[in-house]
Length: 114
Length: 117
Image 1 (cartoon, each protein chain N blue to C red):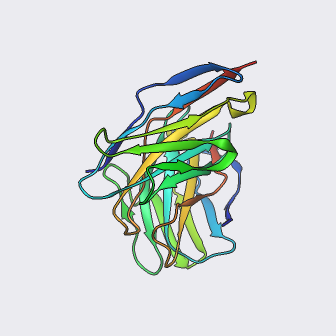
Image 2: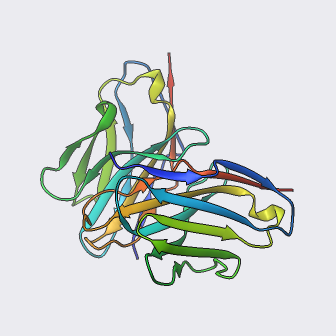
């Protein structure tokens, strides 16, 4: 069965510093990996995805993520954090190319201090 | 980008009544829609997968008679919480997968905050 782990409940970063939000996954087939962001009392907004191709994926709002097959990781990164990046971030995985269910990690709360 | 509209955004109901939540894909056709439940400060728990024209597939532990799902068209899925109780109070979120585009991300509604009193 597929699963996703986000080992950090919270990440605190000063504005202007680089940030990393960690994610590891487990699937038996090819992984389809996603990052979403959630603001309070709102649905999820898509940030980026890895399906195939380049291991470094660039997404919305200056975020990027690196797919590492050997480490089964898909960490989210941003070179310079903004206070407005403060939110709840979810890593998610779908196994294979079928329209199968997407499983979410536990979420990481990102807090950017001015 | 693709838009998923969820209605209502919040609802308060009395114990024992039923509540219907709608999930619409506004600018695309969704063969598959997913219903999630989110508790405060927790992740999204998949409740069921809804396929147009067929019965929904429920996750283990989710009562299908309590959480009725209907996906009658390619743009609309509904979740009805029957005989609601305070423990059903939660944030419910739907997502939709665009028909024929299996490599894309799922698009999410804005969520429905249900409070049962």
